[in-house]
Image (cartoon, rainbow over all chains, first blue to last red):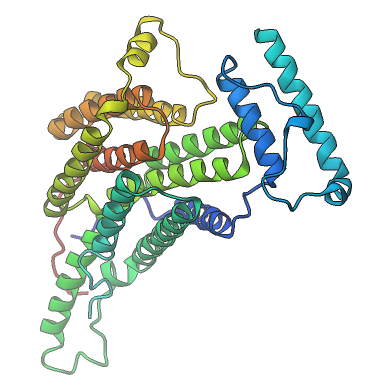
Length: 104
Length: 288
């Protein structure tokens, strides 16, 4: 009498698990290298937006004038160099503030 | 010589990883780098375990179907006895490995498919709100829970190992519940049950609630289909119901990831053993 071969010698299942582990390793390397960190300015904006959406009553309305760089690295020159990013951030801030005014 | 010589390849590595991960989430203020290191360790372990099972699967034919007796070694007086010993040892070790392959069945792969699909959906709706770093941390924790769940199944075929794993995971799960007792919100559970509303789809633990519901459906199906493993099915159902309640009550913090990992690791044992009624077959020597 011999083994009944289980139904699981399928390469698709192995490839699926291999893909799963590769994704996990890639994400781990991204986290270690800090590739997921946005710029300081973007972190402030996204943090404010997240707070405004989750707790609109306690969030402080922000605009570009109230946001100061955490370190002295961001100057007028760097802001000019990242003009496109600033436009996107401004658009998201306006959306966030309009959401706040709707809630209030 | 048996190809699959190790009895439990990687078992102690798996247990060590589980203990380190759960205790780190509970007692250490984890940074992104720490979570990244843990994710790499878990990913590497998952890949190695899958490779081990793949080799097992691919080398099955060489040991289960073919004899080593040939014209060359048949002239030796001990060839027949040697072949008998070889086939029995290889068969015993191979059987152990083949049972481990039950972690690759359809219901487990579907579990991962549901998890990955919901993760992709969660990324899609959360990208404008959360930072990339927060999203990647959430995904890494989810992947670690999935790796614990899958690798736990691949080791739980043995009764002896499964008892050891039940003790380990139950201890870690109890410790996590005790540590997080203060942050549980029974109001959220009562509200969810009374208003029969589902969780916010923007919340990362919703995927775990979905997976718990899927697991409940699978266990109920197992309960209908057979009654030989009824103890495992009942324990598994109770545990997954408890897990679903904890997912609703707990906020998705890093400490709660410890409870999710230990809980899903414990459930993986009952999940795989609920279907553990395969027919016992023995390898008997055959003269070819």
